[in-house]
Image (cartoon, rainbow, N blue to C red; front, side):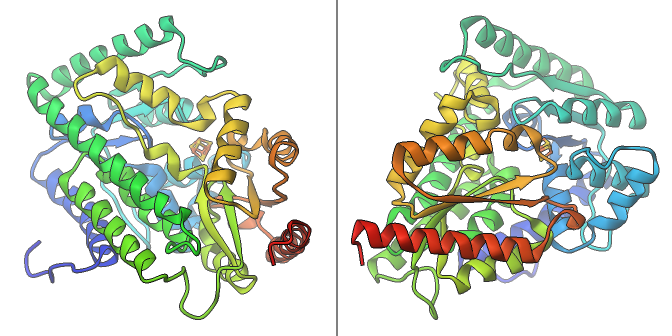
Length: 411
Ligand code: SF4
């Protein structure tokens, strides 16, 4: 850490970790260490065990989006002939790979790639393309879609075999033997980090919630890259303790406004408009107390159980689960977090997460009477979002929630 001030709050620690994440990756690359690019919810345990520095293009693209530097990259990729229908994270990253520099945030090019198909199948073609263009090895971990409620036995065997195959590939790429004792330690830390992430985000069950829900999106950048590290575990424990203290003191999400409505945000944030989206909600007294998206990083399993770990990567990510799971999950979140409403972000990039939203909306309302709205947007392509549409939809939701409160006689 050099001369950096010792962080006192979780926010300070988070900011330091974010800053160091890319700086240390450049230093590692210069010193001859291998750098891997990986999809966001992948078995990082294998890479951490092998001491391979891992970066996450989705995280990086989100940072570029939040700092309003994504249009250059998106336009570049489209000028190369890629469709504007392709996920904007992929469009940002494919251009970054060619251009190699961004005004907002930079990361070194990879020596290898790890791709897991649990989030979508776009990533398979995206990573195959990177592998071909950069002429580097791709480790693929394929997690078949769960049409059934539980992981099928044959799929569990298939995924376990792939983990062992990935270990062999890593041994070949690094020229080193895989240390299974070290893997146990990394699995233990990864589980504990996930548990602390869950405990912290669950603090929002309190009324008022001590958590201003857009913080979920900020802290999420860290759970993506630091799940297998002691520092990541310490950060989420500290964040949890801070939130617990706020609950004790009866403090809500804001100093200058009361939490009037408790809502769930479905889907990825609109990074280029994060501030606008947040302020619009806050002005209406709407606090995001939970989301379907950050839950995907609570990847837990028995330490040492390779098959259990493979299954966790398949089961934990909701785009890899069937519609019944999605409905049950959101209904249970509605009850657990005492939701007044739901905001569905119909994210142009992410078809797999979105195409179920209208049916989800209908079934959730039928099961628990929670009103919701859907707005159009995109995680990193600013051309696909309208402030006016968003504001009108949020006002409509506030009116529906008010009406529903009135009917329930809660006020
Ligand atoms: S945003 Fe959606 S389509 Fe893009 S990589 Fe993530 S899961 Fe896949």
